[in-house]
Image 1 (cartoon, rainbow, N blue to C red):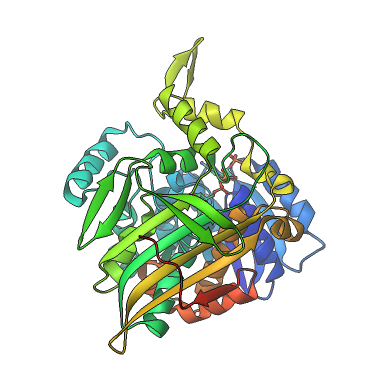
Image 2 (cartoon, rainbow, N blue to C red):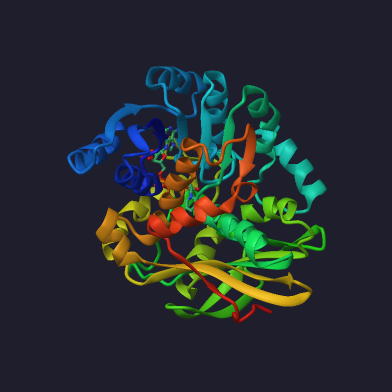
Length: 419
Ligand code: NDP
């Protein structure tokens, strides 16, 4: 029925591609294109014979708009799925506009080089105006709204788990459970153990930047920013148990604050063990998380990229990881004049994910919604010209697809609340 160009072939893309191949009725043909073509060829060899989806591969540097345009013209896809890195969001959106093709991704734009003067000036202005200092934000991609509208094309931003599924939970709660939502707490718990003293579950550079940044939350119409890891809570997660969790800035807070009417507070918490935090603090203190290039024995190196080369590749954690993830949203608000609470969440088992697609649950919980977001666009369920986040569409077909394609969710009407 449709042809898709998938850019990137890392941990998350690997799962999304497996899932597209399980759903050949929608994904009749896919082209996997990435910087390292051999990874695309290896995955193609693994999947061919198990699926009726036709698979081709290509090499592309997605930082280069001209290369992307040439590839899109050659492949002629109905949709480009960007599952490379957030650094490539804008170049891929530009190429989609130039070729008249719909776009989707799993994370919002941030620049690779934080010293770029043009980006830095806009960043400093935004920090002052908005009041949060994370390097990533939606402004860069929201700026494409008019261009996509005029071109009659849809761009779906952030269809992973968080962002992504968490916003579908919010839209579904708004549609079916509440008249007004007062507070949203997004809780992201990974109870998995991979046996390494320190490793990240997805791209280390993106992950460590996110976690080492100041935290922030939305309250009464504005951002409140706090030092990194300075708000800690304990929570007893279904099927995982008691965990420490910390308040982080997270990208979906920005769009939810705009799209959930009259919401008073939105926070995001993620669980971390003490070993992870101690390693991260130490690496940060010695400068290993820096993105500023340094000279070392005649070579220019970027410390965080060198660190990435030393750390285990997240795509290899699958066979070692045991335990479960539990990610969801706790809502408080009103229905028919009465106070109401609800907790919508998914529990995912690392070992089950590995058995099914050869990946751990973090890649799985992101790659499945990437396939589902693409399916919403390809089947015409979520088409409106412009640039949108998940909560701006009808959540019902997406929530049904989560149950069908491996991320079933449940609702607890009487959850423990986070103070
Ligand atoms: P990986 O590092 O495992 O994979 C990234 C892939 O992109 C690799 O195949 C890499 O190629 C390719 N790539 C990088 N730069 C380029 C380039 N210039 N041109 C072409 N290909 C390129 O990352 P993950 O799979 O862990 O993450 C993928 C995305 O998912 C990220 O944007 C991440 O932020 C997002 N994410 C979203 C989550 C959510 O819940 N919404 C959760 C987790 C991740 P090569 O093999 O050559 O390095």
